[in-house]
Image 1 (tube, one colour):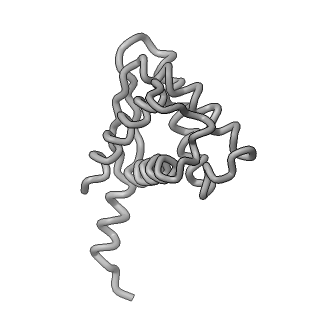
Image 2: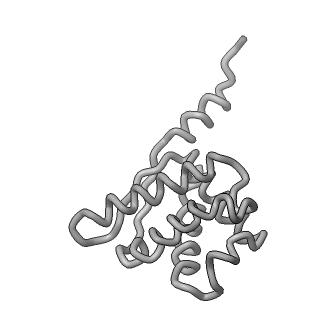
Length: 127
């Protein structure tokens, strides 16, 4: 079977690391929310379509928490494009379905941070 060059390139790109940067204050806002979202897995089943989403969100929260422990400044995280795609798809899905309504209020700081994160993720998905 001949290797499909298109597929090989796409797989390589999905494994590439990209960098996200969030202001420190945004990290302080979103980490507790991410923790609550993880904890609500059983009470709000529509929040989670796949285990991969929970894994990526957990890893995001843990990465942000580690970055917060470091000395001041913006929070910098490295993620693969594959994880970026999963996280972006999750944010878009729960936003459009309203599944996060029990966890987030309209115009809240958490919503603002998620919108900021959504914009960065969208930019990182461009191949």
